[in-house]
Length: 413
Ligand SMILES: [Zn+2]
Image (tube, rainbow, N blue to C red; front, side, top):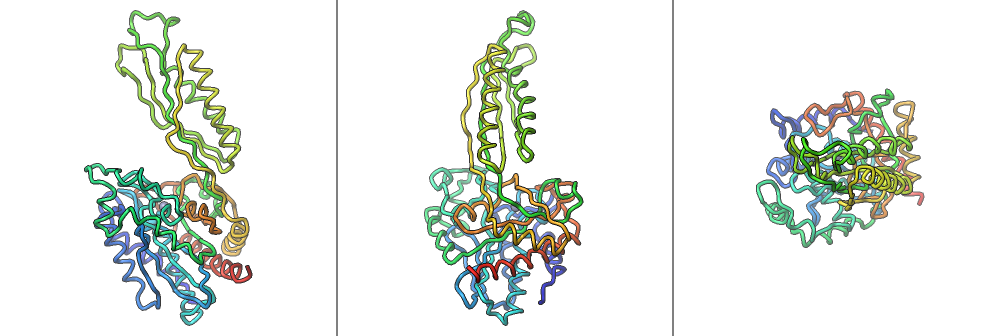
């Protein structure tokens, strides 16, 4: 009734002004600027008849009670990476607020079901290297022992930084109480990639977040003098690694949405006069389909062994981290497709390569879907991150339609 996407854009600009410097947004979680952003957000609630609190993991909940305690959850994250953009995460939070306002206005402050907005704490993991910190606590998958002793670049421990913000890491499991009555979760986010722009589309329906296999791969050959070692007598660890770096491209290209990246490479001894004796690399592989992910992992592993043998080297793999693909809810994907089509005329389904808080919510068994809005140049985590204002307006309007459809869906269940 009173949806005003222009207001959301104006608020996002206000937040930008409040929390950026010459290098971009600085709303890093557990810092003063992030706390200031959250205070600013509270000021935007005005006289809405809502209850609000921080849960045990520092996630901020704003609840508009409805006729039924069953709740539609809407959210995002106000935190950013250092030198970040003005939309990543906060678009979801501020669009959710606009929709909450619309429900309050339309139903005289008492919607048919409860509407809850969540600003998840520390989605980015920018300071301590642990992404999805708050949402994993909400979802019940927090890794407290592994995380408490994480330190930032100044040596400050994660558990101490949280304590300064009033959050005790040992209390994280209590955040799962927020799952009570949660009937669905919707999240609007910028795409952060080039797909929608390349297809000339405004919005996309996210089918899920890709699973990730992340490994350290070390090739071991023989360090030797670059002048005295004939070419046919070398056991060059870099040569084996380089062959693998090229091979992961055809391995990924066999599947339409798969990606494989060798993002780091270190050579030892790493001097101009020595054949590389040891080469340490990393491999990151992603796909929405668990079978495809497993197949790509096996293919890369077999290729590494083949190239190691060709170069007279040994190869060792060790897993750094992995997560399974997390598909979103089929009914909500359909509803999101309808909302996007009604708003823009077309609808494209695409998986998300980056992880999002929505993945943790879905993993907790709460029906979930995300909507993407086009990112200009596909760039984010950068001060040049941007989206056309007419696209932002369309995104907020489409999320609003989706919210109404989801409320109906929850009522019928
Ligand atoms: Zn984000």
